[in-house]
Length: 468
Image (tube, rainbow, N blue to C red; front, side):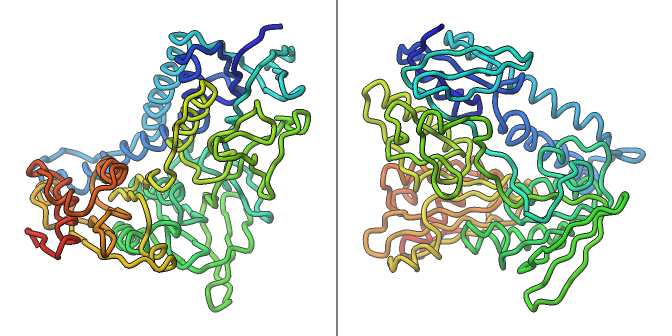
């Protein structure tokens, strides 16, 4: 039986980063993955393929709607080749997952393909896809098994017409009418992909606004922008039945007044969140405790109640984000090496990769009000930027929330072109406890989208934005 210092179960961003960091720190490391490719949900059926389709569909929309205004005439009809679009997406996935395999080889990490389950606290069984079993010994184990799409109790996912995000990445045709249940990140991103390609898209959301966990100003601005793109929204609607009849899907919901509303489409994307995935892990054999929401309970060092077993990523508390899992994987590896790492969960950014992109870090206005913290607001519109007008991406704004007395930046919320990249400036500033005036006094290259961050900081500093 092979013995390891660390065994990592799951090879998503949290798991593979944990394995690499453990190997870097001199630990003999194994990683166990049930699927034939490494990378988990994110690389195979999540972050990476969805971004590939978002980019491809964005190019198509630009060609159809905006090229002419730029002085680019394309003779004949511009058509979608969905098969090629999906094929390119898969090529991106394959290249990325092979990159993870390269990193495992480079760092001398042993990769086991199969389902990992606990025999006891120091032994992991691996049921391979050919039916054979192998057991390894591990001084420490990191659980990084991730999450799966959630559904509602009354919905039958047939994965043909009533689908999750996984199937939405592999459709063989462009839907005529896609009904999206859930106005969160995944539903809006994939809804926008198919809206660009020609589908009618209807979003049904239980809450009174889309992206309900983000700042309300972002919700309002994103919905305004997506409405211009002809996406239909039905807020405060409680879905009560989803029924497939042949090539039709019929969704019934009650609106905020309790009146029944019926929606009919040819596809229904169920995007009501994700659930921690621990199926087959057999945590009971190791004595690992779960919380009342099906997540693995951990302490501040991400250690379970069993001292040599840790858990990270979507399977524990907190936001289900790949970059959160990566930070946690690094933290556990360094804890095992005797170091004293730290994660500030308040500074883990959230991003929605629609266009305009949405990004945020720190506290929302709603959270600051609830906590009774006095704050000031600086907001700057993207359309006031020369760079935004040059690219015709004028929707959105940057909003900075700063402490009313100390001027320390407490939250940054932005929507607009390239905000997924811009948010890192805010994370960096807040990591160093910057004031709004600190940001305002830093030179930002002109013309760039990042000037909106400087201007919002100026607005938060004695209301002195220059270009509005």
